[in-house]
Amino acid sequence: MHRIVVFGSLNIDTVYNVDHIVRPGETISSYSVMKNPGGKGLNQASAIARTGLPVFMAGKIGKDGEMLCSVLSSFSVDTSLISVDQNGATGNAMIQVSKEGENSIVLFSGTNGMIDEEYIDYVLSHFDEGDVLVLQNEINMLSSIIGKARARGMYIVFNPAPFDSSVLSLPLSSVDLLVVNEIEGAGLSSVESLDHKAVMEELERRFGESEIIMTMGKEGAMYCGKGERYYVPAKAVEAVDTTAAGDTFIGYYIASREKGFIVPEALEYATKASAITVSRKGAAISVPEGWEVYGK
Image 1: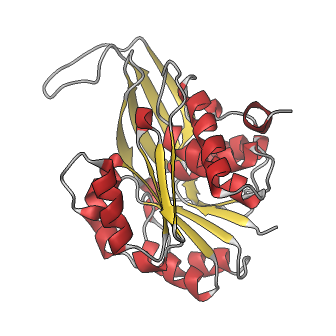
Image 2 (image 1 turned 60 degrees about the vertical axis):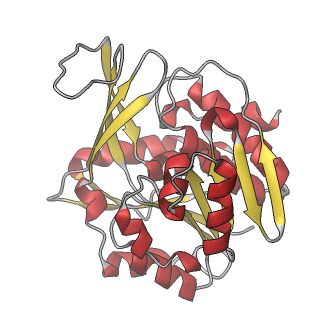
């Protein structure tokens, strides 16, 4: 089995439960406030670990973020590659969660934006051809990471979230699996229509050498790649908190493929895991255990 490393963000999430997402110029009160481990990298690594597969987490934290290593270790994530910057502040996220379960997030990159070439070389030196690298758009130096991972023959998974124009300058042709939601898909395809099929067709035209998955919330998920196309409907659940839904999907899809499941089976398991996550509060702490998804 190939080794898996998630090279990404590690955040301290401050979560406010509110009646509705705050509007410009508006001041509202929250029902509660919590501090949780987060960051798309941490969430995705946690999801992979919950499936029972070994996974490494790589990224940078400050001294204030050492609790994140403890949390990851409790999920059985290997934290030996995480670097602690003695002078930097760990990445932070301010998250509003409405009573409908929708969220709004403000990020401070902190040490997530302090990745350098020396650290990239150190992390990637532990992996070989065929090993899996999972990336998101919450750390810097992504072009270098992708280029060096490609040179090592690693299988590269990229989730361009949060999406911004910098994604368009990345060497996306080197990515093996591109996982997007509706917003990211529209940004990458430049298709302004809400027609998911049109977005996927344009993504396939632009990145036809890659496998592509687009998650569509309540409308399920679509896959195209290697001459195959699949659609999986979403599971009907009452959403409590959608914060880590996409990260859970990605983690469970990658793990399911590594476990030997074919694409449509992996999509089904990833969709089921994501549905369980949105029915619970929190980010990494809401990710289901493997037995909840695969059965005992």
